[in-house]
Image (cartoon, rainbow, N blue to C red):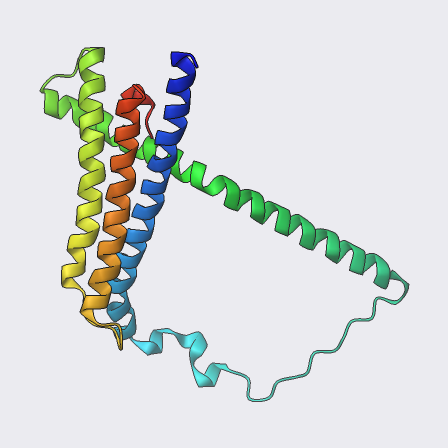
Length: 202
């Protein structure tokens, strides 16, 4: 196997774990956001939810009358089946492409942030290309670690929710934290062993 093929395979494996890291980070932040926002939502004024008010509900429900399409019934049924199949196919394709899109989007966001931070860190607007690549990689790693640690640290302000105690909340957050860090650690190990260019990592 030639070196280029080994590097290409290493890049694919590294970016796969990078994508898993971004997905795990999204789940981690979703968990943190849900836990922290839940008490605020519950304390909100229920009067604002006017559509849930009993006065806004109809006391008597009118039974729905079936629609008779006459001779067009078979055509309507066929059209409904076709639409359902199309929706299922589109959903499957979206789910399959979701991890790749998450990986690319996460890499783009971190790279954009790194590009904005580099002039501040380097104390210069014109940074040599080689130095820019090195700084970009280090900043991206720092951003990933910061986002991961911050999502876990915010759970220190969490409050128990019903039977979901603080140890349970913390355990779930810690599990996501460990998964995210392990995925990215494997990504960088594979990239190092496979001699993958740092700027190609997600």
